[in-house]
Length: 220
Image (cartoon, rainbow, N blue to C red):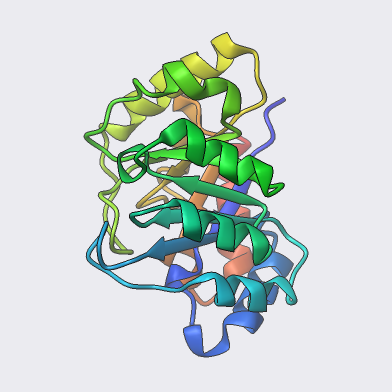
């Protein structure tokens, strides 16, 4: 039976009490903590750096899943690994040498992932699937929280699932962007097993209630 993971994105949390927010959402049943790292260069927004990751590491032992929307990638990827991240993902078009960046992340003791924007093909996976621990399919264009799910992402999730199954490797298939209670099942049916949700969880009063509702949909 497939194990599903729910990874709330702290992009939608209350930054003034971030440690408490992380403890609360993990206590409410979340599996991972998702970091959306933006640099106001690769994407038109600016969020947080490795020091925030290091500070939050003291508040929970839950896996920290870092999504780098930055360019260049390598130095920040290594910095987040050293700051306590468990998994670091990046966009192939933001790295000059994708294979080398994956190797750098793995050398720091972290798992490594690749992220694909809505209009980006999965072609690069043919050459590096043996080095990837996670594939993240963006179901919105990166840079802002609170966007609506792009339905075309479901077909890309299906394609990624076929590649993973054919490889025989244990690779997580994550989806990020507009995930809510009413569409999480469709993403799971397409092949996703790990779900990033920001405003759908942190934007609500009852974290536990939302996470339980998501798990109920996934169990259908």
